[in-house]
Length: 140
Image (cartoon, rainbow, N blue to C red; front, side, top):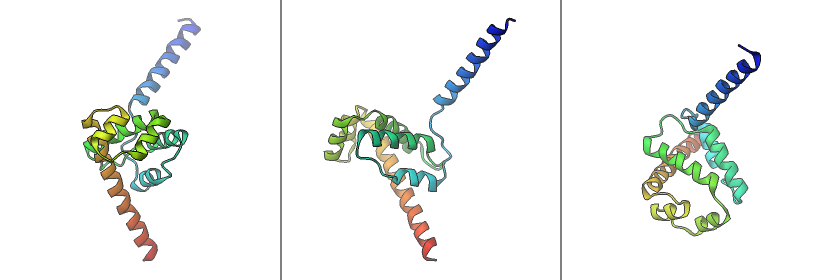
């Protein structure tokens, strides 16, 4: 087999493998401490900061104890954050935190918005528990 053809086949295999790995989504085995540090790390006020937050969340992923609805909500939320624009941010600042408002702003279904709400509940509960445990450790 000619060398050029071997290189092309090898390159194609590497690209295919990388594409499949990228399609796997965010990790689902993050430690609670790392997840919470990312979740609470300045959610950003500018479009660039929000996009950076989405990238950090995607890199860290969720802890493995997240339920299916919250995990689905995480994925929808990260995708939505990565696409927000300035108008979306202004709308979010004024919106009620409910499914219909989120659905309208992010351009998603109310079921997807309900999953985002499940993710918010999971993240806030998990991170408040982790915070109170670390505070208790510091006091003890």
